[in-house]
Image (cartoon, rainbow, N blue to C red; front, side):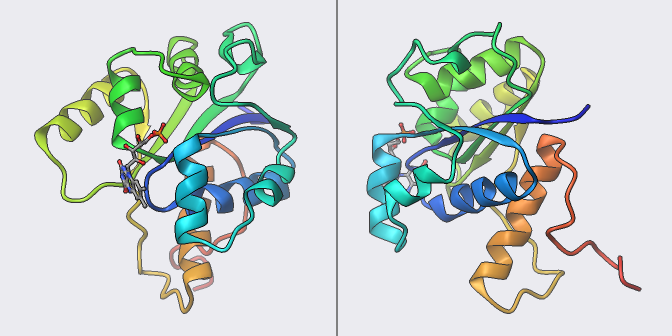
Length: 189
Ligand SMILES: Cc1cc2nc3c(=O)[nH]c(=O)nc-3n(C[C@H](O)[C@H](O)[C@H](O)COP(=O)(O)O)c2cc1C
């Protein structure tokens, strides 16, 4: 399946840098991005990165307020190919796993699951309680791809940028977006 339109939610877990990198790579890959950033994610972005929230938003094709339930991605009739929530807070995970529509981000994920589209949840929490583990199980059983924000080191990243880009590339893989932005294991050997 060719992925041409993605809904990207950025929520208030640590690691919003992953969400920004996924946005950058999706745009480089020519994918149309519908972006929604939760209020807490905006706060975390200011706390843990040097990104300007408005500049990040300007990278997307469409930006939706997290509370705008009239936005197109709130409807299954709108042709979104895949949904990514990067990072996904445990609060947003809990809402998605239990079918509670808190906002547009949880609604977009709910729609993705019911329409049997790819839904990738990049959870960032450690250590995990049984509540988190059960919610990840529920989300997985409903069809989501739960992807802990746990980057690999086998590509020997030299910088934070390399580490984050390699992980973001794996998120694109999970979404079904073809790309060659990141190294592959033993590809060059
Ligand atoms: C600096 C900071 C870091 C946080 N890190 C995490 C985290 O790694 N994982 C998580 O699940 N929540 C984390 N939180 C808590 C969430 O922001 C909080 O649960 C919030 O209600 C999530 O809302 P949202 O999912 O609508 O963005 C953090 C909060 C702050 C202020």
